[in-house]
Each structure stands twice: as C-alpha cells, then as structure tokens.
Image (cartoon, rainbow, N blue to C red; front, side, top):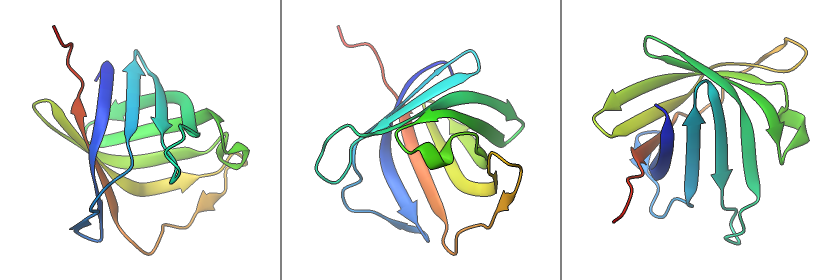
Length: 120
C-alpha cells in the first residue's frame, strides 16, 4: 500500500462518473494523505491521518482536513486490490470524533485508484 495512488474512477450506484476530479492518495507506514481538486480545479480538498487494513476492510481516522468538521472521524471502507489497482467502497461504517455513528448515505460510492509509477 505504501506509495502514491491516483484516482482514475468514481462509481456511484454502479455508474461511472464521466470526468472524476483528480485526486492523489499517499500512504506510508500507517499514515495517509488525500489531495483532491474542487470543481474549480483548485487543490482544496485535503485529508490526512492514520489508517490500517484488516483483511478486506480499510479503516482511516482523519487527523487533519480542509474541512474541520470531519477531523476525528473514523471511516470503515471495503478495500480490494488487483495488481496495481485498488478500490475503496465507501462507507461500511462512519463514526464522528465524539463516537457517534454517522448514518450510511443512501447511495453507493466506489473509488478506483492506480499506483503512480516513477517515470524515467
């Protein structure tokens, strides 16, 4: 998992979005950072914290964010690897900073990322 991953697809309710906004996910020894563009293509969506993987469940705890309201939230997501591709199915479970469970959204959302490779 360590390294940089680029989001290549967003699938909502089984249908791929036509032009998902760029996003990069960096992972290193239990820490993550997510950087995404907003609709104006500014790099304003920032998240980071800790993560762990247990079988097919990815658990991330947000320790910092450009959205202060999500700091302290923990997300459980289904994760699936296939070579240099990983997909995250959001959200199996969410808990806010005070320990209250956040209801699941009424839609399914899957993010598909590929490993960024060094270019020579």
